[in-house]
Every structure is written in C-alpha cells, then in structure tokens.
Image (tube, helix red, strand yellow):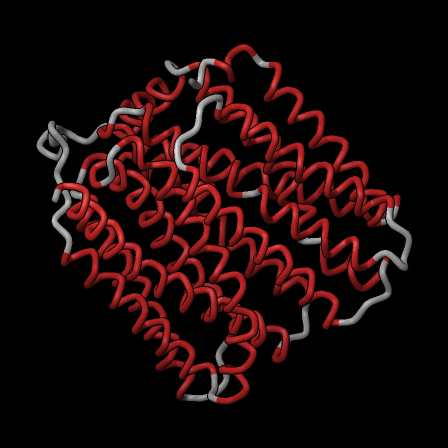
Length: 402
C-alpha cells in the first residue's frame, strides 16, 4: 500500500511536469523560429540562449536559500503560474502585431527565473516522496521524460508554428503550466522537519550553510568539480553538432535533424535503462563510464571522413545513451546524501557552477573550432573528456560516493 502511494504521488507530479516540459520546449523552439524568421541575426539568437540560462547561473545560490526556507510545493506552483503569466503576456502582445525583440527577451528572462526556482524545488521535493532505494530509478525516468521532450519538441514546434501561429503555441504552453500547477497542488508533500521561515533571513549565512553541507561530503564535492569540467568541455561542443553535420559531413537540415533524433533516442533508452536498473553499487564507475563513452563518441566523430555520416549518427546515439548515467546518477546521489533542509541550496549551487562553466566554454570552443576546424575540435574535446573520465575514476574522493 505504501509503495502504491509514493508511486501514485511521484507519477502524478511527473505527468504534469512532462506535459509542461514538452509544451515549454515547443514554445522555446517556436520563439527561436520566430526570432530567426523576423531578425535573421545570430547575435539575437545567442542573446536569447544566454538569457535562457543566465538567471540560474547568477541567481542560483540566492534562489536555493529561498527554496530551503519556504514551502517548496508553493514555490513550484507559483513558479509554474509565473511562467504561464509571462507566456500569456507574450500572447496578448503577439495579438497586436509583430513582437518587439526586447519584449521577447524580457519574457524569456522571467521564464528562466521561474525555472530557476522550479527546478531545484522539484529535485529537493523528490526524496521527500520517493524511498531512497528508488531515487536512481526515478532519476532515470526523469531523464527519459526529458529525452521525449527533445524528440517531440522540434518537429511539433515547426508544425504548430506553421499550422497555427506563435500566439496559439504560447496558449498551449500556458495550458501546460496550469496542468503542472494542478498536479503539484493535488499531491500532499511532506514538510521539512524543521521549518526555517520563522527565522530572520540571512542570505550569505544560509548560502554558506548549503556550501558547507556539500563540502562536508568529499565525494559530492569532487563530483561538483567533475561536473564543472564536463560542462565546460561538452556543453559548448553540443552547440556545434549542427555545424558538424552540415560543414564536415556536407549535409542538410535533414542530416541535422537525424543527429538530434539519434541523440534523443539514445537518451530515452539510457533513461529507461537507468530506471530499470535503479541503484547499483560503485556508482562513481557509472559516472566515469558515462563521461568516457561520451568522450569516445566525440573522438570517433572527430576522426570520421566526410563520408562517415552514418557512423556519426551512431556515435550520437551512444552518447545520448550514456548521458543519463551521468546526470541521473548525480541527481540521485545528491538526493540520498544531503539532508532535506539543504537540498534546495545544494542543487542551486550545482546548477550555478555548471551554468557558469557553459559561457566560459562557449567562448573557448568557438575560438578553437574556428581556428582548427570543427572535426578536429570534436577530437580534442573527446580526448579532454576521456581525461575527465580518468580523473573521476582515479580520484580517491569519488570512491567515497559509496
């Protein structure tokens, strides 16, 4: 009976989150299509991408304090409603004619702030609902849901954007956010044992407490910096996959979509595999193996001749399969080993460190890819990731994760 209860609660929340995740991804893609169509500016598209992750990177530690201090259920509902309201304002503005770029950027920023509150709240709430030995399984299913959104959103966004218009796509996202809010409101989430909202707010003191909670676990603290290196190397090159498909393999937009679908299918398979396997021993080995497989995929991609597109797509499938065994296992480990009252701050800190690594990597990645060629940069990045995997395997602190 108890098992049935937590499963119904978890999957009720995640059904709403899945709907919201897919509709948000569709809207995000539709906005990119709109900006591409109306401005044709690479700078504008880059700014839109920057606005999308910057709030989490910069505001994350402060947001984490609020997530740990106040009712996480209310924060999740409020975040979803703010995201829906921002989308509704954009829809109303779109009805009056062409949207100004500045308004689109403001709405993207507000939605990003809402997501920065919502994401750590959801990660911090999960271990209050789910038994500890089921956390890795649930993290695997969460990764699978994300991969489904990656699979569906580009095609659905293109179809709906052409068949309807931007206003209708925005309305769809508003509906998704409302559904997510209702499913969270429906579920009873256990509170923290020691509510903190009655104490005076001391941002920096409470941020330091979150940092010390992470720092006290040597394995997780080592994983934080492994994550920084992984994000610094891999996430920027992730943006170069379309360039690799079209420039090195002399492909078209069709080839770009094949690669995206291959990666998302691999990620779906990896997420489902992690969900089926659940908590295994020696999870630091799973993390190291995941990073190594992604590095190996990049090395193989960088060595392929222009006629090797099918092998490139196969490499992307393998890299997608490996990804959940890094991200999902990391999430489960943090949920298991950090006390519930610190989880919001710790997840926000992890997001901030990795979020700050991304723009630094983007700058260097763009420079090197232009200088030595995109295929050679894939090769170099793959070799660097293999080094990170070796570091994760050899670091004594990583072995303390178990």
